[in-house]
Length: 554
Image (tube, rainbow, N blue to C red; front, top):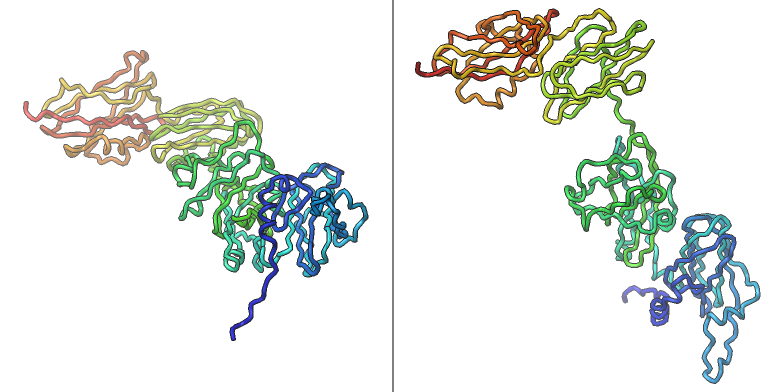
């Protein structure tokens, strides 16, 4: 003989379906249908009554009240069902809405509660009668949800929480928080479709999905969940202090559905919060958060069929501080070499020992241009893009500290030489340069053994050194580009590559041009020519390299 199955009580399904379809009962009605969750609205300090009928004695009963955006006071009382009226010749009972008028006596109080928790009254064997739920909100106009059923065992409207209902923070970074929680047994045991929704905000945890939704604006929508395999895709949280992203995430990361919702500019989001539903995953990483900021995280198990939900025990976490950049100290009058990664930044600090009238800053960008920002005691005093050698004079201030930020190029790594000084008689450490640092080759003056080149000079008397190096015929622009480091001096060159050194200057910039004929070359060969200009202090700056080819036949 097989095991005997227990017969669970059932409701009148026909009556239930009729109540479900009757919108007048569901739209903020005072009648609670059996087995359905309804929403209600409360005016401040104005009690509202809801009614629920239990037709037979010894019936299981469960009544759940969910406050949405304010604490509630509510109590449940039992009143005797009024005797059926003749209702005229039809012999039909009066509708419940009309019977309520006849209910005037105070019933016996079964349960009362005051607060903002989701609370329920459960009775395994309730007597028949008319149950009255009276709800009051003294704080403000508010909303609530009410659920009542006479078949709680078979209904299971709210997803069941696991034995450990806490949301855990499993990893914490400067802009990311990884969350994990145990799955609800409802999906496995009851076979009901369950998904998880996550709410993130910077104010506090929520005790129900209803409370969280009350904080969202009326036109707020669920954010779409990532496609399978995209668990850790960042979302656009920039509207409430999260780090904005450079990419179109909805395109690059492949979100399900349409593009992520955008909100009108200038319109603040309610409570600075975001809600996202992530399917049945119980591990999730929130990205693009603001460093050194506290966030609150709530997870809700949602019955996808009924849209009822249960809140896990929420958590909070503070993202880690942004990594403080290392600051390099500059010594007065000393050249410092600086290397910056592609799109990176470096911070330099200059603190003159004594009171000073001005600070002179020399910056030599060896490769591509760099962005230079200078702050004096946190006040921005300079912001310029620098290419080649530049000199800046800043007004001094007693006991002032200077912080120099150098931002690298997007093309590649940057190399610089930087010097700061407060000494008024300090000489220019780098040689002066013309605006155009190209080397010009005269094609008509080429021979099988020589090449003639020219370059611009300045009004300052500088030393110019010319070097040559034979290269392969296939030597192209890409390889030549690698040789364009202006800070690479002639000290690294072989003696055999040196052609000559000479001094040159011109009081008239229009005539500051010098030429040189390089001899001793071989016919039909390609040479890379370099000109270095050297200052009195010994610092050299290289002009742009030039490729020349001797004639093969003369």
